[in-house]
Length: 352
Ligand code: MRU
Image (cartoon, rainbow, N blue to C red):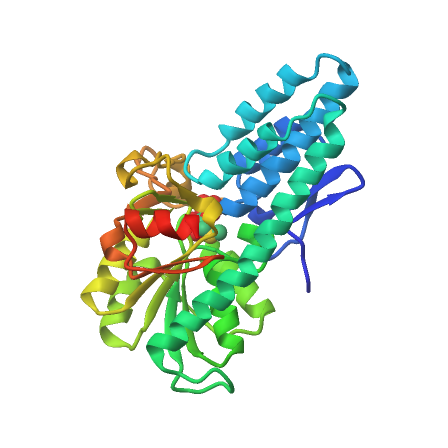
């Protein structure tokens, strides 16, 4: 079944409610900016590029309301709505990147047509970037593994992925997920392992669902099994997305990525990060400066609707971590591949 996680239709923003997947396919129709902020905060939509695209459409809704209220005095309300949407989640820089573009596009006349065109352009660019990243990443896998590019081979590479980086996280074919599906179609991948990704289970609920839809066979792992998997079975690559890449190549991504990178280095497994250039933030010098979201302890103390830990338990729930550039072998963007990333290579890559 083809599902569209983010759609602008007949003046409304329609979001697939990712909290209910894979069992229930339900779309929410949003027509105000505060509803959009709440949908991002509450994980109706998640994934760095997807929340950027969603927030851009949120600005269109804010502009429509502000212009209807006052065709002369709408600007301050739209600027306030942009600031409010920017607070929805702190780590993914794509959110602020998209909102900065919307703010820069504010015209002097009726803002709705211009802002809608800008939001649709941001959305289209993410979709195109996803396809390009899939090809660049798949080519890079082929280079290292020396595997053929036609006809599936059982000698193909084995990869571990983490969290969800597919259509649900981007609105297109995905970041890391696009590399995996593209490489699988090219016959390069023999085995995909997906980490379940506690506490929201983006791996077992969303990535498993999307891999099935794409006809890619996989095995799920509890997050704590990944390091041992690298020790006792053959794994070639860990392939993940990113929520923010600092100017020096440090990467913030879903909690657990740092552990995967350390285990990958220990076991000589390649570490590939796949993200559009909208995820690279030159204004953040290093990973130390990336704001990392911590969410409610309830997400750890329970599972779905069930409470697991005894009442009164405390929990720490950081939802992202930072992996330093030195642990990353390759960053893939829509522009190509950065091997052994550092500040100079990232600057050069963005200028190319
Ligand atoms: O908390 P989430 O589900 O928004 O976290 C998503 C991730 O960490 C993804 O790996 C990341 O956004 C990059 S892939 C699009």
